[in-house]
Length: 135
Image (cartoon, rainbow, N blue to C red; front, side, top):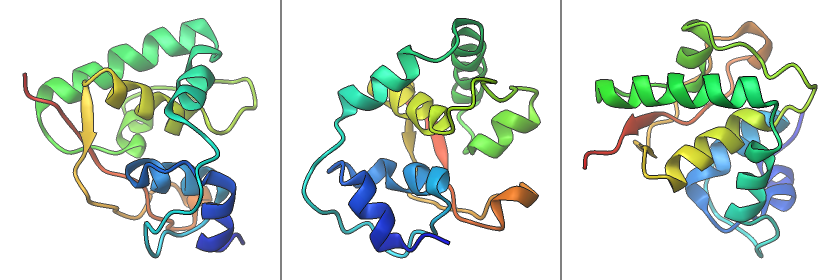
């Protein structure tokens, strides 16, 4: 299993608010959000989302906006539970990239909460909690 230091070395993105989503992809548990030298940028993450399968990207944005409008905290587990399927292209960092894109568009922001994932395959790792942005 990845350790948080490994996750930080791989991520090294400078924006601690998205670290838990990146660690979720790697299977690391976040113990801190201390960051190291930047390597990935917000632009990199937006590019990952832009290269997602179009049908999934459209559906994902619609579902995230619906959750954001509720103004209740949610996680990517909630998005999956609502019927949003996996992207289907075998690229595992689509979820974090999607949420980063929605944050960059000022649709959502992180609450600061990191509940444990309910998905059995996540083995209880922590994931970011999100909420809609008021305008």
